[in-house]
Image 1 (cartoon, each protein chain N blue to C red):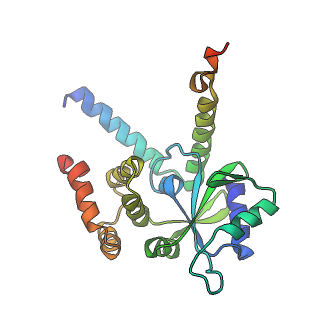
Image 2 (tube, chains in turn red, blue):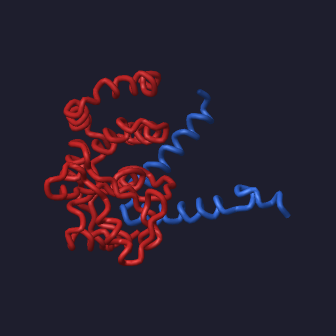
Length: 173
Length: 54
């Protein structure tokens, strides 16, 4: 993964992408115990093409293709890891990138979304595996309740969180 | 919950805390091993149904 992150950092240096942050299962692993995943989710800030409101990943794929990396469905395989680039299209994702935590993987710098942003995005995505991950975050005690509450409030996710609590947490408290 | 079950759950929690406390680099190394294993399992004949064709 170190080599994968080097390529992504280089893309940022060459301004193919703006700031980025790791999300998904790899992002969660920064805070929790490692759990099996096959890909890396990279949330990226992309510049809007002039005069267009549509943000496209075309230049990202083109850049990687020109360097010999192949696209496989929604991923591009970079140095052995399938990477899914997710344009930060909403305010929650954009804030997640801006507030991401700086870290390193074997000496290669990278950025990971905060635990509270990962939980908010998982809650909004709402698949079974997202709820399982949120439960892991709750059980681990790494969440800052004030920060989480503030993120959920800002992005209109409080009602969804209450539903999640009723369904998965009430019995434990 | 009986005593045996309580001990089992506590031991699981302790193992999780231990893994959680590792550095990101160490966790990524574990992720890579888990991923390699998942790919081996996914390619295994029992998963792909190839054992029926022999």
